[in-house]
Length: 241
Length: 354
Image (tube, rainbow over all chains, first blue to last red; front, top):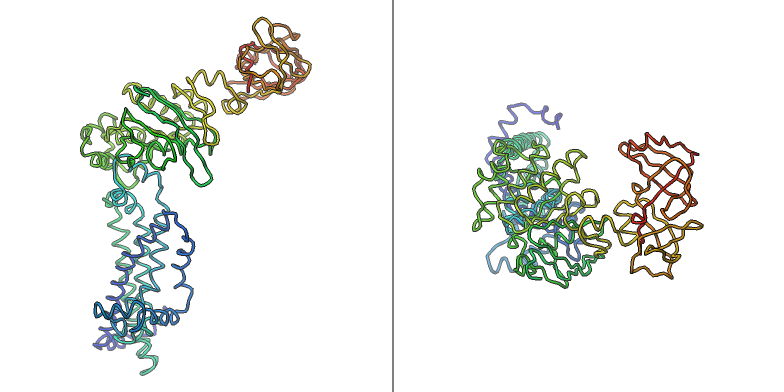
């Protein structure tokens, strides 16, 4: 990575950054990944809570299914998604008919591909976060007079927030870097990894490397900022309330 | 069961392979009950059931005349306190109390400040729980518990993470607080010394059922079964047979030796039985004893173990017997392995176990 970063002159970076397409692709990547992280939280955190706390038949199967996207090649994941979300897919067809929502070559498609491969990170990290919360604290809160939702809000979520935030950050990172599933579901509009691939095919290594370094730099800055926000100032004593 | 502060009526439930069977107990107002038993006996499950965290298969729970069997935990007005008092680690002391006050909107018991002052933790209001000493944690937890004005306190091994001296100090202060406030409480512990120090009444649990219960001192003095005797710290448990009665006392034979024991009506004379003798009830003196009416036995010392306040002397008097001597007596007797001594056991100290 360092070798790659050092290979670039500021002029080369500036030239690539000045291209409208490049800026657009990077912004699209960041935007789609943010929406993905949002959905990861909405879907993944409740699932993580269930896996950590509830007892239900088939729990082991669900837990294994959550990890499945980590095990398959992402091109395979993309093709599988295409079957479900494509124009004739069991979700794709009604989505198109009812809401005019298409996953083929759209932002929705990019988000779907990113979500599929990145939600396991949120589920797993948040699950560990929830499992680390002593159930006796929750029982104490219930016996004090707090209802189940209040306990979740005042006790469980604040105590599990480290795991949840870690999971969301990982999902966000994974979403930005996703290439295989995205390229199958939505080659266009072009996200940064797809455009880097295209640059590589059309213009050769130099332009692809310059854009890669640009994406690396922006991602790095972003994650430093995210971590500082999540675990620095906000994690100060009493901030959980 | 009228007049009872808490009545558990024939509670039964199943949790996986664990079963709670026919738990039937009643507490009068201000009474402190201790549930005692080994790990896995069902003490904590019983407590959590009273607090409302497990669904019953049968039975009713009444608190001050209200039937609370089907109420959610947050509506029972029962305060549950765990090991280390389970303060919420992400909230300050004041935050812990404030959350309890907010939860109890309609039955608010004073203000945060008033509660903190009452338990002398006002100056710790802005501290996080991890910075508190065990004593401060206990006081903060009691302030938090009282905020919800509960009718019953449940304690699940509150002292189990503490060292000996701290433990005894906190235990005494907690008992004093409960007494002064007239609070009805149930404790769970596996430590019989703690049970005796805290409880008015004891219920001994084994495998999900109550095996013995009664006033704490009576249960301690008169365990009814081998299990109860072992669990309550009786060191000498001996196989014996019933050999008749004499002067209102039962005669029991351990091999060649006969001992006199206080008679118990429920003993079945035809069956072999067990005897329990507390090590501290065996009195040693120099000289010979001969199985006479006062249960004076000739014995040979086989081993001596220093144990601080008590010295443990292992004896052979036809059967193995352990005596625990207070320090002064041990110094006066100076027992050595091989020494002949006289071991004396009052008939009242010989327990017939079912």
